[in-house]
Image 1: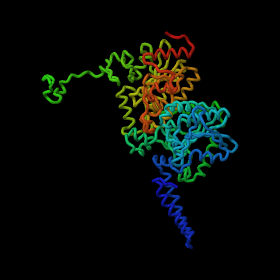
Image 2: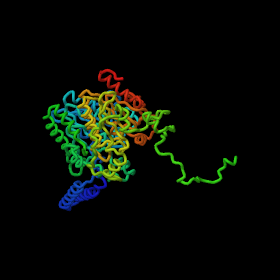
Image 3: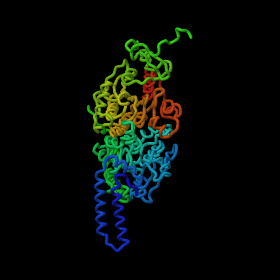
Image 4: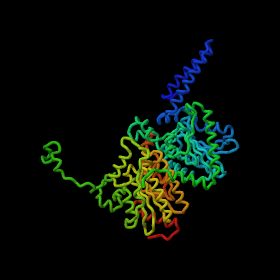
Length: 317
Length: 286
């Protein structure tokens, strides 16, 4: 397990705890009490740290190297029923954007999401979760397929942004994202969106227009990353923490601003500290949201979705 | 060397107050170095006559070019930005807004108007780059949304003239959501079977490109405009490669299939109205 700077007190207690237990196993001394005491301290510390996270710490958690990624969720949720589908039928298959069919219980879903890698090789293979236009077009192709067969769509968002590359511009990155936003608003099937890590700007929104948009507790979603915001507005990379606060990018802020619909609580210690529990929570959320959305007719679903976005904005008249 | 040619005294000797000042705004110098009389420039649609360089202009000039006799009724002119996030970088967003309002006389980065072009009603939304880089926040989103409503109510076409660096950072996620809001409103216009013409001008980048600018029934552009999603500096930093000449120019976008055509500014009014007459299957206006 890798620890972030603010998690170091947890790391220290965890090590103490493991050592104490080891002593108990190796010798005749009864350390049960000590172990329990340390465990209590450890749990309290976790609680204390995790209930007082600032915006920048949540950004760090959203990028935690041990955090589950899109395919981890889908494989855990659907097990062997998941079937990945590839290609945009036009240019290629984007490895940063994945999609496919899978079941939860008896219900089939179309899953879409950006995919990050877990080591240098796979990070490069997945282009760090930064999709090209063909990724957005693949996502749209799959979503249209879901609509044709009346299947609900689940998108899992985790991207530092759409890829700002030369070829991406040649193939129309802006157009691809714009098209997705427009088309997603019109799909006649339920769309459930979950931000599972980073939700950066148009790259995120390109698969994030939905009926229910939820954020895991330790994720961020905004128009720009705190680092880029710092470099543009402060002309220095030094102000990322200030920028993170200023952008109001945490799940709590986003819920307050009514830009997202729900926050999904993570296990104490973050999604990565108890992956199984996280998968269970996500599965439950998807199913309960679908139950609600199924009650609406396709027309009501689309109208409500459209109105939700049309109402966003703060201005004086 | 002839004596008259020799500089006897070193340095500039004229006192500052004795210098002959040329009043500002009399001349314009285009990027290729051509010098144009400002009055002549205005008469030539703000296009440098020698090299066809299209000078950046704003909503007043576009309204003048496209509406008959430059007459129009401005819509929702009082809409103003609030500061819902209490955003502060090196300046408070509130103060920044006040300063820009005072300097530009504008209320936000877009103005919308209804009027006649070649005798027929049309709604035009034109962005102003000098208002925080033409950035899109809540006001731009809402004004475009209402422009769509006006077009539907008056059963007339809509033109959006993009000139924007993208979403407005000081409104963070609220500004990101304007991509969704504007794109969704355009579906309502489409359902009413009314044409939407997207005119991309220099520059059209970021969130604007990832929403309404690329969603026209036709996407058109002025020559030589910068149009793209990621800015050229970001692309260069990411790829580490030198960018090809003309990268992200109007001509580049047309070549890659994202623009229907490029129009010289003096042809804009004619071409836009011709398209409207063709697509709506109505008699072509002279």
